[in-house]
Length: 179
Ligand code: C2R
Image 1 (spheres, rainbow, N blue to C red):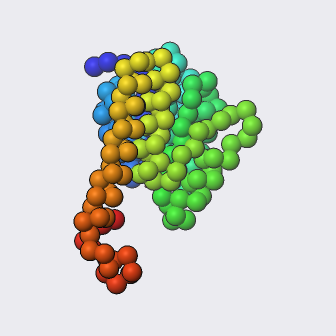
Image 2: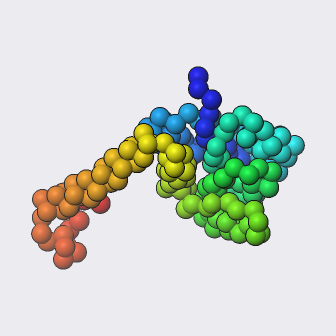
């Protein structure tokens, strides 16, 4: 197996359903990656060791998902110079606690924070690909294709809307399949 270019870590296996969405995107773009559970609170020494060895192992971007008092991304960023992307998990406080504890880093130690939950995990993966694409023409081409597909999906949504009965616009009926 090729060496991972991106490392996906998460505070607990309870975050896996969300973080899996990011892994799927990296697979789609053909980016070698690894996935593991690490916790700044529950396994602090392991987090420090992991962070300090990243560059030596050839990892170029870390995606760190954590919920609640989400310190994982920040603890990794404190111990490495490679870019760290933080994904706030949904939580008992609807992810607001995760978002704030991931994004509000002190100056000097950036964590590139994306949105809460699955959309964040997906965007973190795309952002990681964009970072790697700075020196990969093949990834640049795949990212351009991704934009084409996004635009095509909007066209498809409009086609579905046009096929739907007109009166849903007046709020009388919401047709099936229109979202
Ligand atoms: P459990 O389901 O294991 O109790 O974890 C995890 O990311 C998870 O969302 C509940 C939540 O605790 C989070 N967690 C952190 C950290 N370690 C675990 N925020 C950390 O080090 O930041």
